[in-house]
Structures are given as C-alpha cells and as structure tokens.
Length: 298
Ligand SMILES: *[C@@H]1O[C@H](CO)[C@@H](O)[C@H](O)[C@H]1NC(C)=O
Ligand SMILES: CC(=O)N[C@H]1CO[C@H](CO)[C@@H](O)[C@@H]1O
Image (cartoon, rainbow, N blue to C red; front, top):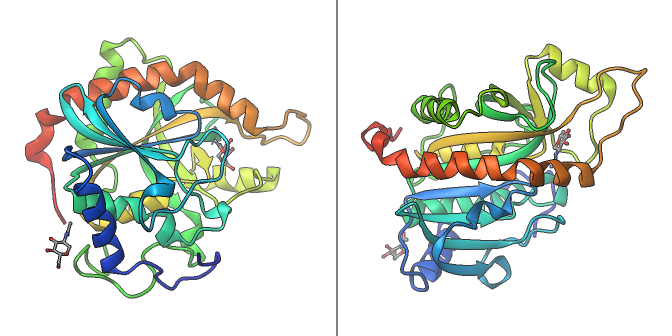
C-alpha cells in the first residue's frame, strides 16, 4: 500500500479491469446504482433481496477498511426492483490510504455498468440552523485536501475514465436532489431534511474551534472526513451523483462551550436516524428511473 501524501497513481487500468472481471464472473447482478454507506449506515442494504456478499478481503486489489462501524463488504442485490451494489464500509484518507485506493471502488462501479452513485456519510453541523439528526442533501462540496494537492485525480490522466480537467460545478445531480426534496415532503420529513455544502477535511482529529469558524466563514454547512474524493472520481467518469449527509454532531464554534465530539456519539445518532435515511433512499431508488433520460455523460 502507498503512504499518504503520494500523488502517484497506484492502480493501473489492468487492476480495475481484473477486479471488475472477478466480480462479473461471480455475481449475476448487473447493478445500475451503487450506494456508499457512511458511518453507522451499513444497514442501508438491509432491504436488499437476492443478496450476494463479497468481503473486501476476498476481492482482488480491494483495500480493507479499518474503522469500527464500517463493515467492509460489497453487497449486490435487488432493492425496490432495481439492481444495486452497496459498499458497506468505505476507505478514508486518515487511514493512510492513497486517494486512488480510497476511490478505487468508484471506478469498479463504472466498469460494472453503474450509472448512479449514491453517497452517504456522517458529518458535523456548522450551519447554525442545523440540528443533530438532520439529514443534509449535499448541494455542493469544498475539497479542502484537494486545495493542498491531496486530490484523487492528480497524476497521469486515464482518458478511458474521463477528461483531464473535469467540470465540478454540477457534481451533485439537480434532478436527484429535487426528487429527494419531493420525497421528503411526501414522507413528512421536512423538519429534519436540509440542503447544504459539505466540506471535506482529512482528519483524523476533529476541528479546532478556530478551524471550525474558518470553515463556517467559507460557506461550509457541514464538515466530514470522506465522500469528496469518491464524488470527484465519480463525476470524472460520468456517473450521476446523489449525496446525503447525516448531521451527527454540532461542531463547536464557541470557546465557552464544553461539549466534545466522539465517535460513539456519531454512531448513536446514525442509529437513531438510519431508518429515515433508509426510507428516503429506498424511495429515491424506487423512483430513480423516472429520471433515467436525464443521465449526462460528460
Ligand atoms: C477487461 O479487459 C479485457 C481485455 O482487454 C476486455 O475484453 C474486457 O472487456 C475488460 N473488462 C472490462 C470490465 O472492462
Ligand atoms: C462519522 C464521523 O467521523 N463524523 C465526523 C466527520 O468529520 C467531521 C469533521 O471532522 C466531524 O465533525 C464528524 O463528527
């Protein structure tokens, strides 16, 4: 495995090809939708039928996840009549993976024939209007590690996946966001569904108060340690993206307040709200073909 900080690409096209062929020869499913399950949201795959499960450790070239609460397997199956693949457990920069390892599964999804990537995560709320337990539809992101050259697309560009200078101004599908908002009205979830800008930091420490204040000034509504690399690589290879972030804590912006975040609290809140997240995503997936004409390949 490469060390963090390396911008050199660690995965060749042959690696992606080998992993994809390995999966294609072992699963009957040909998913069009891939879902990345964030911290404590592994149960998103619970309603799936005709399951075929592949532990990451068995899949050639796949990294193995190390965070508690991240299970570490690919689950193929049918959800609401749609063929899907779920990533239970993702890879984080703070674990020491290079960003091409972090985003490796996204290109596998692309080669498997996936058209839509749904990403979920847990994040800390910065927007003063957000409450713990809110579900934030991701409207846009700020790639803070990317500003410092920690970017999954640094290095030689492989044209088979996408262009050298991809557009990122429309990374999160407007149609899917609109559909999700409609669904949140129907389900009567409007008092806890929000929209906002997600900022990625590398972690693993939580923000200092000065850092949190800076991020808020910069227009970030929530902050987390994942998602942005996957979304960037997905957009590069022409996948349609929908992102949702569960606000599991309020980031401390005030020196006089004593509360501190911890990972247990994050998992607790995820558990509490997971059912709502699941209901929203199931409905979104059930209806996603309403939008299939809208897929744009860049
Ligand atoms: C993998 O490579 C082989 C040989 O070039 C090719 O026939 C096959 O279609 C590739 N598989 C995928 C999933 O791209
Ligand atoms: C699940 C998790 O780790 N959530 C955290 C993600 O990162 C942000 C920013 O560091 C934290 O505030 C979240 O609690």
